[in-house]
Amino acid sequence: YYIMRAAPVFAVDMPFEIQEYIGTCVDVHEMQLAQEELRRNQEMYKILTDVIYHLVWIENTQGNFEYLNERFLEFVGKSLEEVRSLPW
Image 1 (cartoon, rainbow, N blue to C red):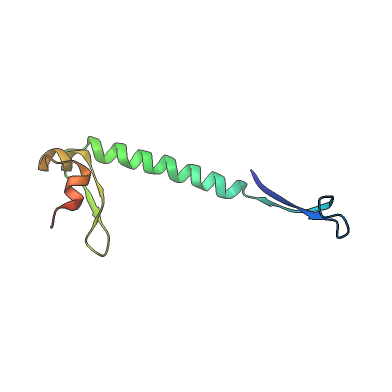
Image 2 (cartoon, helix red, strand yellow; image 1 turned 60 degrees about the horizontal axis):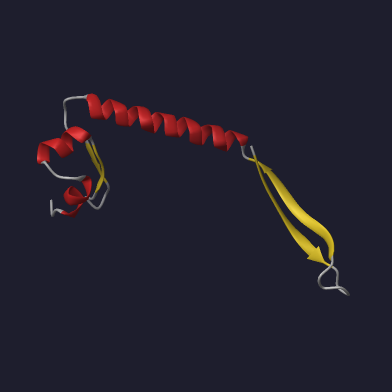
């Protein structure tokens, strides 16, 4: 995978005539592979936490929910948006 960008350089004496292009090409193959692996791991984590019987949740340092598994939402009988709006 590559990210390529180019920008035209216009001629000084003819403002609408492209004289040349300046560009960059960055190899992002390793980054793309790492992102795909992260997505697979996140999907697997979600499947795992949704099929177990226990309640699973993750909070950030401010005490806001970052993640709630399906069992947690079933237990409290509310949607994710409703749970996030409650004053815990």
